[in-house]
Length: 143
Image (tube, rainbow, N blue to C red; front, side, top):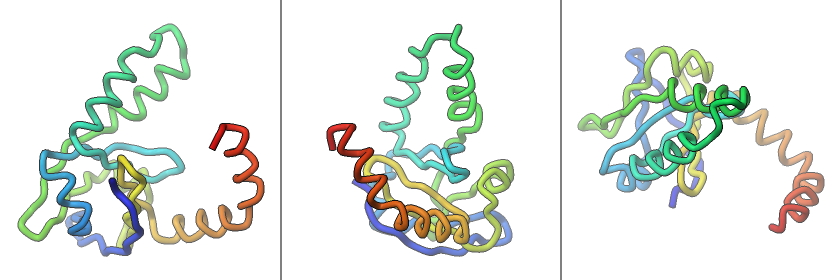
């Protein structure tokens, strides 16, 4: 399980250190892809396989299914760790998430999200302001 929030720098080559606690769960390999809300998603290989299989069952005749599958699958790349525990984020993914120098690495149970630091700060502030509305919605979902 991935949890927590960590701030890290992105070096000029586009490498980002993944926190040690999270790295251990990615030792079988990882996949990074375009996520929602203009962040990146990082999945352990096993979780990625589960998601990819679900996406492959979506109907090809539905345009939104095709669009979501394209976002997730065509934007994906397998990543490896270097000796310092960094992954190389391809330029097209850094551009998608507006990642330049500072990033936030957030654990979200079965995936990691990588955010532009300012975008994360803004998202958190907005979410904290809407706590009641979010809670009511979640209760309607049975949570």
